[in-house]
Length: 105
Image 1: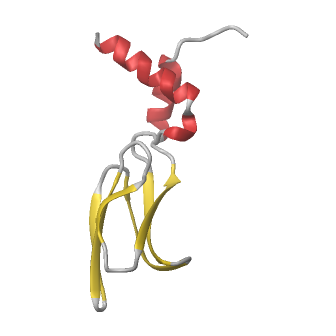
Image 2: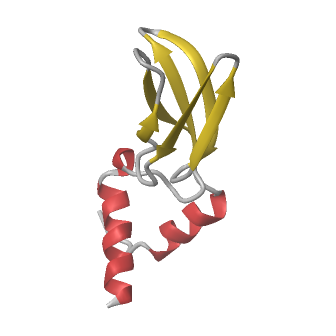
């Protein structure tokens, strides 16, 4: 059962690589007022961080699979946007690729 779950995860990454973030990926969360970035932080995917700026503080979590900013507590009128800024660890990507079944073209 565990093997089939692992193969399903590998297949999902192979079919939709843009939809998921590799283990150990780094995310950036920008706090925006319109298009202007007011504050930002970098964190590993799936983590939460609180930022204290002069006059205000804010906090957000990032989704483990997409780096989207979620469960945020923000000052009124501001929005949080999460993006992936680096991929996961090279050894994790190599392990996933070597475990993936080889298909002849």
